[in-house]
Length: 504
Image (cartoon, rainbow, N blue to C red):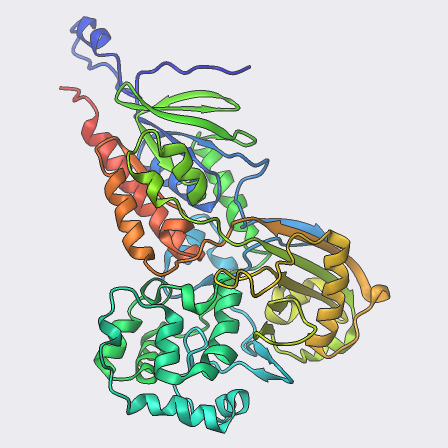
């Protein structure tokens, strides 16, 4: 039965405080309250940070489960990641959180073999010395093999080309920067497959400052794109660019939920929010599970939902509503195919545009990538995960396969896996399979993204104890999301403490 919490905005009743007899003991102050809308990783991390700062927190999640695309599922008796399966190691944001949750000893590096790229007519090892597929040395034999000698010479000319006014543009896409400095072939055969795999977007629509922070400044400093990439690679932390958690990244969500329960955070799944309004110095949130009044609010839902819910309370924010993120379908195959023990395509492949007959945009050979999983499945058994979904910026030029029925996607995955791995994979080889769909789970940092984020932040900073977080603002990837969520939650906790009535 829906309930209604007393609208005290999380603060003590001042009249009651005045009537308290002076016995030498001050009345206990109520902890400030906050509602977190959205129970993905952004919302869970924000809720934990608030609870650690002494705030009473309620998390409202529309779906039946928490964690969003950081979750696990069962396929052929194995517990596998259903969404995100790694995180970037460029900062300690995720590894630090995992350590706090008792998962520090479970952080693992992938197999160093690295990924391949499927090009029209051939498959090549993806060079490891680049950044988002941009090579630091276009004359490297691996690069020449992937793009050809003519394109390699064109890319190498980047060292001698004047910078002109390219870097001075207010809005610059990753595609424009690469095409201008290194030519179209590098963009199409190296950068586009990587970017489509990571961001589900075409490089021509991605804001270079958002997807490659510091790259523009590095080009200006070093005089060329390749020198800038080389310098950034050299400055990056030693070791693999990504890491995972033994047992699957979904363990992070499970550990977060266990921690939140210990901290007495109210977790309400299957509780879609209907309306949000400012009320009595705080916020009133009406959901399918009841009405909640609180002093503070963290909006950690997807961008479209966040703006829709806040547009009546925050004038002007409706004009900044983002486009829905791309949909992604993941087909996981667990197969008995001993020929794959040889890891014929490293840890998997990214697929370049124009490859005929293959509709997947990427294939992860999970048992080749993660030794812990290979130990679980044993010799001969393999986990292949194929990703489908039209990239942002390709509307009208690429078919969207995410709406296909599961059976049809499975059939396509068998065909694509056979072609990409250069090994026959048929029905009798399949021990189990599953399709998972993520709708709008990968918001893209399109050109102008940073300006839009700044405008959203400015509108929200109206003194009403509101913070917004999530990938649509922070950027794609767990590192960005976790770091931003913690920052926003700490800011809100500080605001609530500063606004709380003094006990003196």
